[in-house]
Length: 369
Image (cartoon, rainbow, N blue to C red):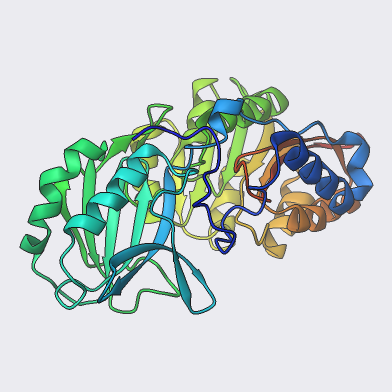
């Protein structure tokens, strides 16, 4: 299944997944740049042009998706996005990778009906896919027709996750069953990941953002890096590869486990950053030489306690902040500037072409007193 080079007529306007799908690349990037300049107004003169992928990478790039599953007596299985109370099927979404689209078509053709297998969601992360079932238990043999065709999709692992209350929370701690393939895969950077990992959609842009963070933080022997919301170890590996001591904090148990493989020379604490701040503070105070920090929080931004600890107490010499929400980034940058930090640059990245989303790496330095 090849990657299309333009949006087909079947990409219906009712699908709300790609709000910029009617814009060409230059118009989409111009809107994103304008949005950042407006929301990050106090630092607009330090915002670089939006880094974007090659034209051939604007479609067929998304390898991490969550699709709602719906069963219809006449139409069978449908996978897509919810719009109010309506399921919009997107079986041939041109933004999804060929692997995702091939998997969806296989499931549509071979999944047993919902009366036998009440699938609620399909989650794909790289080469790992999960069928989330609203049931305490099911017969895994029901998937045999699907398993016979999985290898041809490019998938490497398929999980059955029994989660009766799936909805507000996609995953539960228990109820996991690997029904086919391997439990781990490697991403484009060679990092191991599992079914629930958070991976950036365009690895080349993610790599560019990490390179920019490395250039700003300047890790190396004698430089310690505190890495908050560290994921499964991509950034930790960058710091330790340069010779830095590094401490990561991450809530996901799977991600923490993977960090031990992907960044074995780093120390990683499991929990929220607020919960683990006492241990992070002890580690920080024990480090000799220069100390810097990297943060990559969710859309809600940094918790007030974390901002207070970083800006008012730990006071790293340099800070790199990768944000997926310009609004919360603006709020947090204002707090750091009030505490004596200077924003030297903001580097935007078009991690999600055809959508309105844009991420930005803010580079901060502690002002010389």
